[in-house]
Image (cartoon, rainbow, N blue to C red):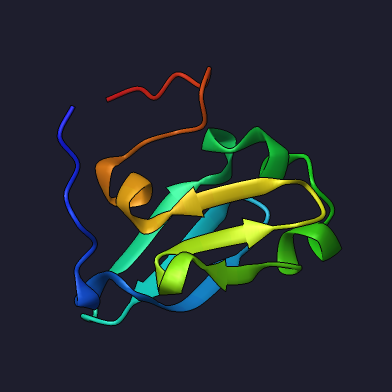
Amino acid sequence: MRTSEPRAGEKIKAVRIDEDTLTVDLADGRTVSTPLVWYPRLLHATPEQRNNFVISGAGFGIHWPDVDEDLSVHGMLAGAAAPGVSVAV
């Protein structure tokens, strides 16, 4: 499988998370939203655990230490859910 290098415009500017959705604003102006059901660790986390995140990976990832979850912009843009989670298209 071939992977592409992250682009500067794909750096994370802001992260918002609510009961149903993870939303990420990117440096190039795009906003990416994914359903929390794609990420069971976040779905079952408390609001405090969900809001305890750090932007990682030089700005291209998000880490939640309380639930040991890591997501990348690349994965979100590709529509990748957590392993074992089925995504209907």
